[in-house]
Length: 370
Image (cartoon, rainbow, N blue to C red):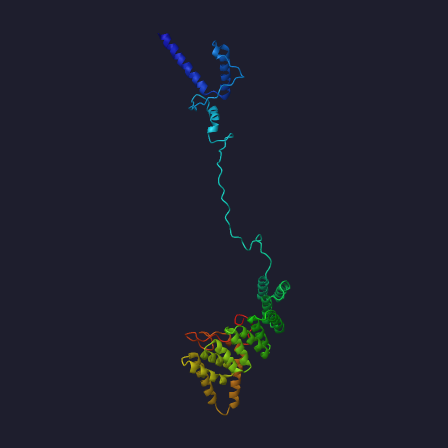
């Protein structure tokens, strides 16, 4: 009885050892064991159905259910057998699924980028380049830009006017007159060209020719106050006050026209002639406060001059002439200022019925005269 128990215990130990060896076997050991088992089975079996089958005959394919994981097989061999079913490539790398690519956003092209096509140059480009050079006091380069533009676009009105205004601002009035004349000749129906030429002629003292150009501008665009104001300014220089009043009254009220005409006469040292126009403005609008103040100021000055001692008439006359000359010399500054709290003359109006002071003839083209 004791020997039987020993034999049983020994058999169990052998079985456990064989199972552990099979579990820890290497792939080479497993392959050799399979070959030995196959050889022994084919050569030592006594049963006829256990003999090896001819190699030329193939067994029919039979679909089999997937085997459950085995805990006795080598794990490396098991993973190799299951590779097609796992999300790994043959090289052991993760197979990444194709990712959709987003189309690039339609970004706004950069206008300043060198890769952005700029197209051919335009007259506005050369005009801007010339004005920038003039702002930097580089007059030769500004002229070169205008000349190049005129070479590419002969007779272009915008380029000619820009070049003429630059020469006008530089004091080259004959050259500016020539350029303005080219604009008028090429564009006879452009009122601004006639206005520019008329002002340039007035600055040279050619008042009659200037008036002709300004009235042509008024004829082409009669409802624009700027052209009528400029024509009235030249007419006052020619002492044709009634014609100037007609131009002012055509675009302003009658009271405002008389007031503006009177103020322009005061600015030119003709205070006595201005009194009548201030009185006419008050007859049309008794509540016109600037006209009241201007008339009161002139009457006070006139009474002060009349009350001066008779022994010094020459001194009084000399002081009056000096005051008139000072007023005439500052005509350009006073007339270029709009009516407002900081204006020297005339005082402001609450309802804003009075237009701006008219531009003087001696003004250069710029923000006031176009």
